Amino acid sequence: MTDAPLLGNPPRAADRRARAGDGVLRDPLTGQQVLIAGHRQDRPQTRTGPCPFCPGGTEAPDPYDVKAFPNRWPALPGASEVVLYTPRHTGSLARLSQQEVRKVVDLWAERTAELGRRADTGYVLVFENRGGEAGASVDHPHGQIFAFPEPPDVPMRELRSGTCALCAESVADDLVVLGTRGWRAWVPRAAGWPYELRLAPRAHVPDLPSLSSESRDEMAWTLGEALRRLDRVVGGTMPSMMWIHQRPTRGHWPQAHLHVHVTGLWHAPGRRRHVAAGEHGSGVMVNPVVPAVAAGRLREA
Ligand SMILES: [Zn+2]
Ligand SMILES: [Zn+2]
Ligand SMILES: [Zn+2]
Image (cartoon, rainbow, N blue to C red; front, top):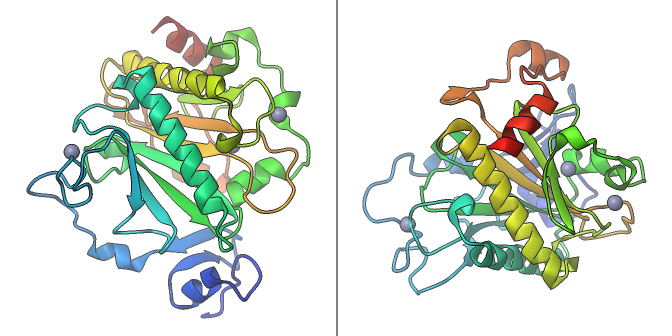
């Protein structure tokens, strides 16, 4: 089977990449989307020498506050960027000031707009793997951006109904972890992970570039505070994954409402939560921590 169906309609640059062995494919049996990235095998697995992301390093020769640049080892060729959050080598978004996170939010918005203007981009995914256990290969605080040719399945599932589930859902008080006038963070009632958070503006804002200055400040604080609480609940740095869902960059999507998914990878200090065979085999997650209990712990942390 060499002719797996491709995502999107040819002819596109992404399809040519896919035919060359790199790009988004869909498994004909399962329907699962897969990004084959064989070239990443050449990526250094362990690093020695000075940090490439510190000012003066190979990827950041000049001084900076925040910085985005093309990923040298892209999973998605030509459409993958690294975002440096701070010139300081240690820490995370949780340890930056609100003003510093605001600069990161501004850069995410700028890159979303810039990549979204490209004819071969249909969706901009901003994300982060925090901590070595989450898959980050360099300690220096950073995240990534993928510009997909078409909206991938996970955000598409959320958009498919055509109405905004976030505006329709009233979040129960026992699930809310923190909030500001314009933003809030809560644990989903049907969370699949022990410490899973959702963050969103209360108003129906479609994407990062559309956020007002005030709302960007509130996002910066809410995100930093949510991560600090995840850390405090395990008494250290909770390895975590974070991704931002926003409006696709082509087409008409009035139902799209910007939000952030944050997933802690531990269910208890130092104890990794593994997705097991029964879950992979069924698509049904088994969460050992009751979401309202998780929300309570995060509120008190
Ligand atoms: Zn560094
Ligand atoms: Zn909405
Ligand atoms: Zn989402």
